[in-house]
Image (cartoon, rainbow, N blue to C red):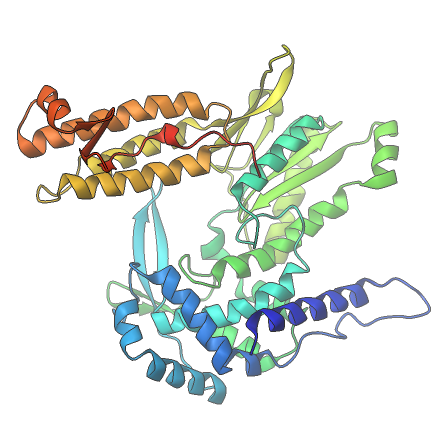
Length: 457
């Protein structure tokens, strides 16, 4: 079986279903349920399909925390053929029962804790098989202004889209955030949205099993009556499927083409939006703050009625573009350009700078005493490269990178000084190679400025 070819056919069939559903010719009335996708449950237990799902999970899960059974990738692969054959038979005979998730708490940037639900490896493979089926079907339905967890789209695309709205003269921004989206999203809303595209009760039953798997907390099994686990393979896609309804709700309020021109001539408000997972911005033009407040209330009611979700009152704000706003770790504002005019600029949010400083200390200085300097350099360099590649689109990246280079350098100097009980001067004499701290000329600490600022999408 050619997995990519099957996914292409699913995409084409889904596209035909959408066109049939949206047809408005009165002589040919259509049924919204015609041409829905069928027989998906027979697809996911096909050997080639499940093997491809397993390969993808192996790559993503290597070195990651295991589920409640404690099985790692290397352990699973020792008897991988037998494990996959057993999983295949269970999916085929409908005897598959997912194991509960393992609850893990990790710190968030605001000091609170984020709960992750870690599935077992075999359950990750089953979820990946489901995700591989659903993704091409719903890619047809997703709005072009949705950027989170989608193929060939990323945070940079979303941020540049915000900048484009500022160039186009949109003035007010609703900075939106859904309250505990992954924890609170309605199972009924998920299954209802999928039924609009899929007619396969066996497949829907399997998805419900995954959603109701439960979670182990302090060795107690708790039921999951709502939400999708952060850490689940299929969870981001399911959240996108439900939040896609919000996208099209906002799209119906926006004006395009001739309507946009007429609205401009009459001085009527118009909007554009950008969404990345549960973070989104709505941009308004020819509007005031009162109009923005009323739209925010409409969005709140829509999310509650159609998605079972609530707006985060703490994080959802109404801001004028001249005052700047935050989105995905960036800070967008109107700044003075080279010609002395106001232009939209993308900058690095101060909280993002504070977090990387803390992270550098975590991987360089606050380590077990037995951990070698070589290991710390490897870990710190990986952190530096990852952060730089994310923030390289910012206008102030070069200036911030120079500052962070200095911070990382002295953090490593202090770590080496303490490790070997020597002075900073001695550290520079023994561990300084071609202007960089390291253990050898070929193993030195990466610099933030090694990554060049980029404006490419």
